Image (cartoon, rainbow, N blue to C red; front, side, top):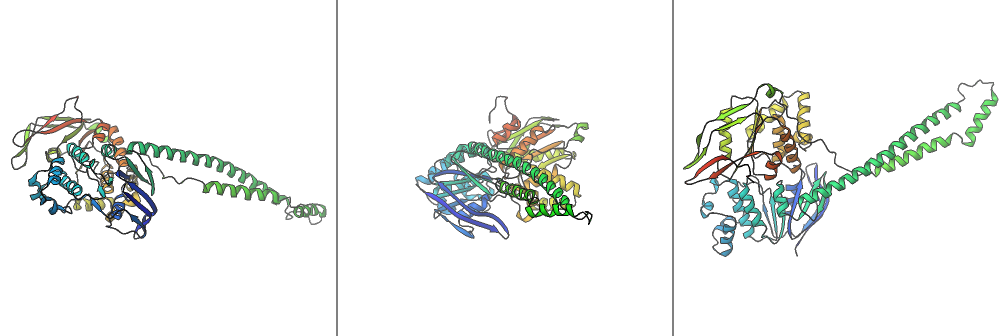
Amino acid sequence: MQYLQINNLTFKYTNYEIFSNLSLSFENGWSCLVGSNGSGKTTLLKLIAKILKPQVGNIVGNDLVYYCEQTLEEKPKGFDEFIFTYNTKTFKLKELLCIEDDWFYRWDSLSYGEKKRIQIAIALFMEPDLLLLDEPTNHLDIKSKEILINSLKNFRGIGILISHDRDVLNSLCHNTVIIKNKKFYSYKTNYDKALRELNQYLNFLQKENENINIQIKKLEKNIQSQKEKVSQSKSRLSKKNINTKNKSLKEKINLAKLTGKDKHDSKLVTNFTKKAQELSSKRNEIEKSFGKGIKIKDEKSKKEKFSFFLQKGELLLGEEKVLKYESLTINQGDKIAIIGENGSGKSSFLKLLISKIEPLKSYLYLPQEIDKKEIVKLFESINSLENEKKGELFTLVQRLSSNPKNLLDNDKLSPGELRKLFIAKALLDNIQLIVLDEPTNHMDIDSIQSLEEALKEYRNTLIVVSHDKTFIKNIQLKIYTITKGLNSIYELKEADANNKI
């Protein structure tokens, strides 16, 4: 059996420490690495892949490693070797991942999901001892996810997966590492069970802290009581206001000081204070938790009811590729999910809806990827906010499970953190309609759950494109599916009531 061993690892960016004295081990099979955006998951994979070097410590067992990073702007390592190898292994991998031969000759025109399948096929072809995957299911449709999971189950080495997709984590991984407050918790089980175990442990620590706090409060009362006695004793033993001729009283005071009667209460104060300090040092370090769920303002929409009608039509998706749709009525409070294969026109249909709804000012449209111009506009608008509004913004970010202080530096934001900031800024305004294109991409699981809670409470209109089955089920969205017919014609239709994704 192979092992990956991380020994006393320390790594920092400039003055910001990511890991300190970290030790972890991984065995054969799939393990998932779960944590909030910015917790160091991708950094750890890059250290294991030898892209980054630790300042202290070492990693053993990573001699033959293949790293599948999130972005696919460049062709994966081993691309040419794979396409020019004609043997049983390459044919089986192409069949397993449903890869068509012409994909290799039109890389730039492939969808993200198609590129990801090629990347995974090459990784399996290289037969590494250690396979690292960073968010492999981002942008993948439900069918592609199933294909990907089935292919990865055939891997016999050590696999480490970063993902926010709960279906993928639970169906593929049998070992879970959760990062919370820079601490690593390792469990030999799937994600859902590991999370339950961790929450039980953290609740136990919290109760211990509560008991310690109760004892400290009792000691603090005793300290205050003894301090008052000391103060009264000092007042009694003071000669300041005694008549100079009253020699008898002065002798009693001198006798009390000589015999140390005034020292007893002072000693008790010292003892109680020492005990309180000892108890305080025994407090468990627990990450401060904030309330989840987002309060979405919708006062304006109570007066102006949202209603929209789209007449039956067709949408040209590309050469000889058409999306047909029936007449569609969207009313106040409707919550809709649009699902379908990659390249079936879901995002194009959302853009069509937005172009028709454009006169409506009170809406939020969040695309799959935010371009650089939009990022610059976002930070300019945040900088122009009054302090009170900035406070509201940071509260929203906090409720999306991120530290607002980490979001002030544009250059260091992960894609997930940037997405949270974008959503939080938009939610400062009154919103009648929310349109989200794959909102869970790049977001950590805590943030996804916070978003779910908010959208369940949201009383207005919601349209979502998503491949996250758990997300769709939790918000109880009405499903519209895009299916492929003959001659590259796609059709958008409302799914049956019994439809299961």
